[in-house]
Image (cartoon, rainbow over all chains, first blue to last red):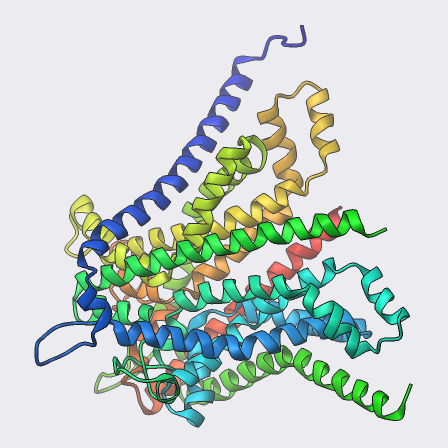
Length: 291
Length: 290
């Protein structure tokens, strides 16, 4: 039939390419499996109730990571509180209000530039700008993270705004609603899951961030409430991992933190996938419903 | 429409406009602060001795501020990571985009997004305890914390972005191209590598550039595995990157030394801007290529 003779050199080419593909994919999978397996195997045995619920004590020579866990939660909350309204608002402006093409492209270019800047530079600028005003504190760290995560929230909200059918807006306008009313009652509820996706991605990024926090939020391990915590320096889990591993040689604790971070990363991945699936479902619903 | 309501609408419009301009403000803020704090040291040291000086001794009695070792290390390290990461990443992307059964693809994509989500300090930690001793025993060098260790860690860290962007590029190749090639008697594999990959080249180039940006900007993981001595780059020597030069001395720096660190950050920023421009070029090429 059509399966005519394939010359040996072609056969060799096909074989080599197949082999290289298989090897690459196996390597990627092996790396992911090894990393997660190794970190969990090294870290989980060092996890204990005591480690999770105490603060480090020089007197009894123990290490606890409760302050670091709390600091991480505080900084995530503070960052999201600021970045979600700003990012979503910027996205609403771009898709609903902006009429000047040039302005839109300037804003989008700025967002792209922001997402390409390495975190160490954010850390440095955060140190220059925010620690001058607020001192080395979680708040200074959170403000730095706000700038870093702004493009992410903007992009996910924008993507979801584009899926809100134009007919919904027209319907609302037709009923006599003003622009703001349409945005408040039709557009914003419609892009809720875009904001949630942005929120999840930001949490993932904040969990993993260290270089930007080293010089803005500092290394302290003090146990504080939310507002005192924001005003005082504190290490997040990643920064604590770095300090314990690199400066103090406490590899057990470092791996325990790494294991926690790994599990949280998995949870974030899962959450993003779930929201993505809901998103897909809703979009198909819309497409079938809209004329 | 009532006068009051129009006023409120305009106010809301204004608020959203301000929120939209926040990103532009941030970019300006970062640029202005970096340039303003980076220029003084370069002025004092001189542009040529700063960029091309081959010794960095910021704490020596007779301090010298040459950052050529950092620049070269960053370039070599990034090039090495690209050399290792791009072939693996693009072959994996071809497999995932074109050949993989749906179930395999979703499993591998989960693995890739896991790799993307792992914090850089965790890469650094594993590199410190697995890779560094491994290099020491494998190559019989006194210390495994070296450029090679950094290259391997960076190569792994850029894999996810290369794979994801390449997959998108490969999937955007019009099906007609592939159908035509198949109809002319090429096998699927030949079609994917001789038709799809060349057709997706600007997207894959964008993936590579993105990887370059990631690799050159990475600080923490590199800091933990590269040894951090200000040597000229060599595969088995302890080296310092542009990023780690900034972060390793910032905590205790003062005076001209501190200003010089800001100048290093400015150089890094310029590198990133160049890379961004290249990325924009490739993405534009992709749009026009269709």
